[in-house]
Image (cartoon, rainbow, N blue to C red):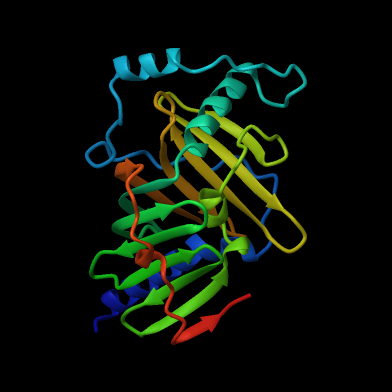
Length: 251
């Protein structure tokens, strides 16, 4: 194996590890919201036309504005709409592009079933699978035939996979950034044992999830952008089954 291929494989594995395990180490809680990587228009198109987005907005129930909230009225409205849409999703599947902290890029397909289950299957040359079965998360490396296991409760994936999540809760959401076509929602974990940051990025018109960014203790970002997404399709439970053999448990 060439040095370049070995370095790429190592970088992909490290990025997958960061995607899962970033909350295991302390991180600064007062950093600004990470600036989202621009969406590649060729692979991450808008999900709805302007007319469809406008029609969807007119069907949204009114939002009660809290004058004591740390969020502006516009941010409160955006969070309420995002929360209604995101909380209603039970299953999701599509394709993803992952950008690692040193610029490496990989891609694959993903399958999600709430609560607690997701699978990322990386396309070659990577031979990686990330699987959450409801209680644990496994990173399976097909090249080395090894598997690392983490508690789901200590990874940022638990926010994506929670049965219910309230993105209007000021105790959960640290800050909101509104861009022309995107809304970034920053979640900062401040518990004594688990700390870290997760940025969820939604389309500003349709409120669909477009991307998320996991930030580690050193400030390095791993971004995952999703596209060609379908929601509401039944998922095969075998996709989320973790084979315990060759597993190395991690705290």
